[in-house]
Length: 593
Ligand code: MSP
Image 1: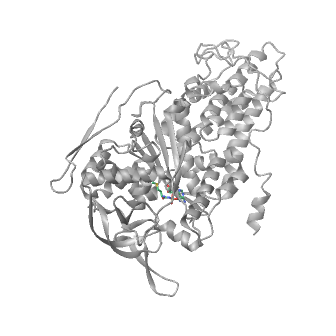
Image 2 (image 1 turned 30 degrees about the vertical axis):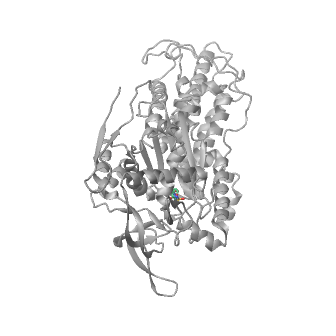
Image 3 (image 1 turned 30 degrees about the horizontal axis):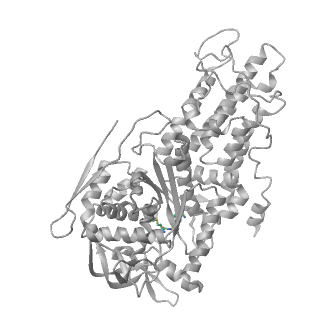
């Protein structure tokens, strides 16, 4: 299937050099259900996280942004295993007034602060298993080249002009705010200080001659893009919110600051008295990492999925696509938006002293445990609350008891003394439900289980496509519960390997449960890569048998040979995920203090 849509941006006389800009959507290829998905990207996919400010150490919200992107990317790699088909970038946003001021407050040169905090992000992401293929720092030379080239294009297309710009500037949010988004708060000396209504951060009145981008020209093209591609921004409420914003007037945007005020940034080409606006600088990182301005970037743009938090939606869904259209490029393929983590019901903030350190969490709950928690509990549509007991409860019940218990029940020596993947008996469990006969043992609920697990990979893929990773994990968890029910119902521990009547059914029960576990292990790889590796290794599944293309669930039931039957189970017999509530002295202690 090949679908092409064209969006035309007509330049207005006297305002810009853009006469006719064509936007064609990428080609849509169809393919098998679990191969390269027919999602408009062909086989290639490029995932990005926001680049993180280096004014403060990373917290769990930052890790969550990166984990969402990591899980999407890892899931994609399971569908299209070629390393050349996927790119995944993250990095640090190092310029701007916010960093300049944070460095000054810490008595450091900006480069020192950037090196220090960027290294913390890199270390955290390494430890958390973020499988990015590039880590960009906006202070790198390759980025300056990309930004200045991009600026040159906008200039050449008549989209930049110089003018007086004035308004409230919030350095914490790095943007101008309209009067309606500014309020007054009593300051330390009792006087009234203007602050951002949303974040509460101070704002200051700024009046400067700057370069200004003709953003106002792009209101209609942006509306056409979003109306023509209802999934461009996912989940849907955020798509709707952006269309609502676009109902209002879209003023032109200041895209530089006086260098005397902001020196920590990339100079405007040909005009050293001005520094490029940090958001324009930062957004171009998505092009820098794919080789822009060299032509190679074209094979990755616009097959891009940006993962972002809701607070930076306007920058990604309005400014960035407008800048891209202005430079003659297409908007990104997808913008996936997530909400925020609060802590014990409160916004996380340095001043409240409630910032949760992600490295402590990785230590306490293990890398896989904490990844699972954030992705299982994090719901993109609304804010989620963090507290320690919630992590312990979830991990103990879903990873230690349900999943670990299931594996243990089917592989323990006393129940599976041969330590092999047992044989499936088609007379005990015929593919046709409702058959009766002396050796038929399967019941209606068992067929329901087979059906649920058989359709699970496609269901999970749908949830990933819709950026509902928590729903994918919920679906896996529900199938784990169903499989435990299956084992419980047939109580294999009451069956006897020595009995010619019991043995084929006992083997079948274990075979079905192991096949379910193989599906769960495969599908959990994007979220809990180490735990999934342990699980699949224990089942004897080799590294080349772990992709979604190879995932043929219960082939013997469908009349095909099963490559696992009779295979030796892996040697590692330790607990899949030890319970946490035994070992949480730190939690009790933390509550007493
Ligand atoms: N530097 C800009 C992004 C530029 S991208 C071209 C920025 N940086 S940030 O460090 O403030 O935020 C990075 C990401 O972390 C954003 O997606 C933001 O939404 C996310 N989070 C920040 N606090 C968060 C929570 N409390 N919870 C979840 N995510 C949060 O914005």
